[in-house]
Image 1 (cartoon, one colour):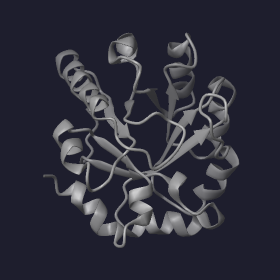
Image 2 (spheres, rainbow, N blue to C red):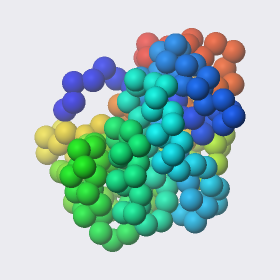
Image 3 (cartoon, rainbow, N blue to C red):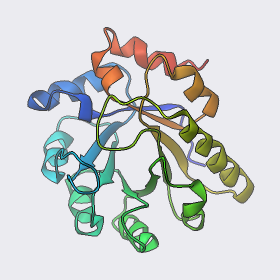
Image 4 (spheres, rainbow, N blue to C red):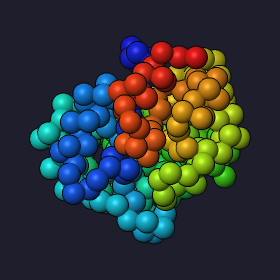
Length: 221
């Protein structure tokens, strides 16, 4: 298991002002964010379109925090190297986009980046069981991906327990991340699930005191 202090808080720039991304990175840093999360959407796998690897490359010059890139796109094999070279430290792909997931995970790791696999709320955790020995991160989507500011789907949190059990029983070495519907109102049920990494977007950027907001999660129950 990676020796990292958890929960790791990963504010998502999806909810920031795209006209001033340098300011967003500075806010994440000074508020005590641990990672910077990037939701990359292509308008095909999900309804919306966000940004590409150039955004990540341009922002890389303004932050020393780890960049956690989530590719919610079709044909990620054509984009993995671009995001890696742009400065992504971790690259996560969706389990639903291809049958050749192991090949893509090996592609990410072959470039020297941490590889993650993500599942949407309708995908059972058992579907990626065979991939667990190879990944560095499992991302459980707790909303239907595509838009920020959605309400958390509580049933999705049950998947965290499954991945924790698999990790313990098999001695796997991956972090468990959740993304979607994270805010002060859902904090208690999220902390009960014990994810290692928590992505937060709208609630962080709209918080009167973003640093205090992150500390609510870092201090535990």
